[in-house]
Length: 362
Image 1 (cartoon, rainbow, N blue to C red):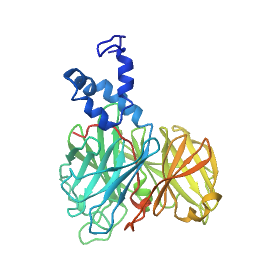
Image 2 (cartoon, one colour):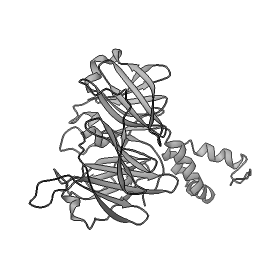
Image 3 (cartoon, helix red, strand yellow):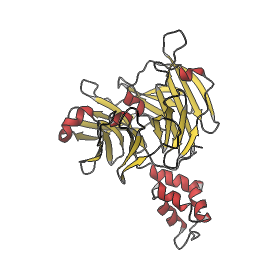
Image 4 (spheres, one colour):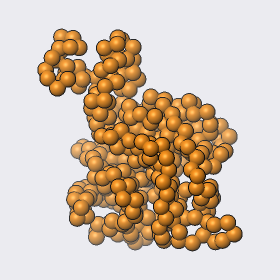
């Protein structure tokens, strides 16, 4: 496959691979039914890696929309290239909510049955029910029995993934302390492992949603906005990364953690400005401001607007009923999606970064 040939037709193999790697997933899956040769091609490990590497460069927004608290919610995917589409999780025979997203996979928790978690690829409709942990604390997290932090780490190169459940543990009959329980599921071993540490950090709802996986580590912004909490999955240790010195934590300023083309990024929103920093050097924690955007043209939306995902070319933001995109090169704002009915929750409340891949969860 590395040598120029015409095994797949009149075009060189490399050209055929590059054409297929640009197809939407539904079209790509149809090519499997063309013939056995094409089935082997699309199923080849080299092609899967090529397709996923291209796909992750196009982050989207995934958000839940429901007409009432009783009705089953639908997932809306907003793509800067292909527009808006609806994704169904009906292949999960359970009522679930999306807790984390990484490189095409979703981690969902059961609503009626606490402690039950699924990993799925909504584009290929693959599903895995995670085994129950032998550790009882999985249902004794403070304050509501659910993990404070849920993280999903999908390594495109090794095709392995990990699910992280972390939170303050409440022993029976005792008040919660600073004991921070962390359970990590590894897809290769199909087992959970556990380690305990002492933490004193808290997290808002958006902090929990905006988890970033890079350098085989998961990253969350703390509620105080003073640092980034990091879980190194190589060594099962927690550490912290300081924010840029220029970040202001005064009244009216909000700080969010995102990814930008494989780098950690911090976005600060004030009354009239959106400032963006990127961690250019991860090892020495060197931040660099890459953009400062005026918010005057959307000033009325600023108090209720939240950045969800970004690249070096655009930023997706969500409000109560809208998903907007800001094109950095042209400095143009555009509405990508708007709720037409009375949604029960704001769009930003359930919004996650999403990438459409063929990453397998089995």
